[in-house]
Structures are given as C-alpha cells and as structure tokens.
Length: 113
Length: 113
Image (cartoon, rainbow over all chains, first blue to last red; front, side, top):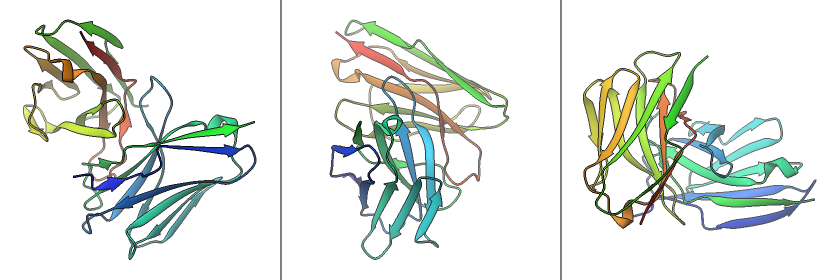
C-alpha cells in the first residue's frame, strides 16, 4: 500500500523554465511533508518542507504547495537549472516531530540545457 | 558540525553469505537512527528505526536485522543473503523533535549474485 505516490517517474524541462513535481498521499494523518533531492550513488538531501498549517512555503527558487483537501502537494522550481537534474522524493510524516518518514517512489527530473 | 558515514560503499556478495553494513554519526548525541533501502524502481523503504542504544523497531518483515551497540553506531546485518536483498541501503539520522528532517549517509550499493 503506497501511502505517498509520485505518479510521474520522470520529467524533462528546458533550462530556465518552471519544473513542477507532484505528489499525492492517502493517509489523512500525515501533517508534515518534505522534499528530498538525490543524485546518483549519493544519499538524499533535504530540500524543503511544509506543515499542514500552511499551504505554501518558499525557499529561493523552490516553492512547495500543499492542498490538504486534495491530499496533494507539489514542488515548483523556477527557474530550472542543469544542477537541478536529480531524483526528487516526496516524504510525509504523521505528526510534527515524528521522524518516521514515508517516501514516494521518486521523480527523475532532467533539465535540458 | 554533524556528519554521517556508512560503509562499505559497494558490496557484491553471493547468495547465502552474511552481511554487515555499518553506520556512524559524529557531532551529535542521542540521535534517532534509521536504515532505509531503495530497491530498483521503488521509493525509499524504512527498514529499521532506533531511538536509543539497543532499541530497534523493525518496520517490515525481512531477512535483515539491525543493532545499535553504541549511541552513534547503527549496524545492518544478515546471516544469509537472498537475491531480493540487492539494493541501495541508506543510513540516516535525525534530531528528535526536528520535524522529520533526516540526514542521510552516502549509501551502500549491495548486489547479491
């Protein structure tokens, strides 16, 4: 039972354009969401997070949007850069401070120069 | 600053052989420790979770075991590897109450032949 789903296994975006990565979840108890970025043969690194009391969180070129009613979140990267090419994982936890994260299957983002 | 190391980085083992992957964290005390696995085409699956020395929670039934002999040391083991144990294993740590932000090691690629 995949409680966190990333339905697009891959995405290609032109450099300078906006990249939008999507994530859906089924567990209504999730209230904290994170995005991780992973390069090949390396561990994932934390990118940005959002708690359920917010619907938007922005950090530089990265913005995460949360739609609780739709159980959907998205990561926007603008403008996209070649260094953004990586696998992006969405993750969720059941309460703030509960570090047992449930991860999605990942989306491979390729930025085309 | 905090660092996390895991080794070996790459391992090729025959079916039925034992396994030991080790992970250590520096620069922090009493971390939560985790073992995740990324199998081909799948997301990051939580295998084991530890909140303290000798305290291990297993998230999925499997052929693997974990131990935490010291506060900042986490070991993943198997007595007899199966082909299905192949994958990319990631150790991670977190500060309790930090909202789920995990810090991952570099990963260990295990191939069982």
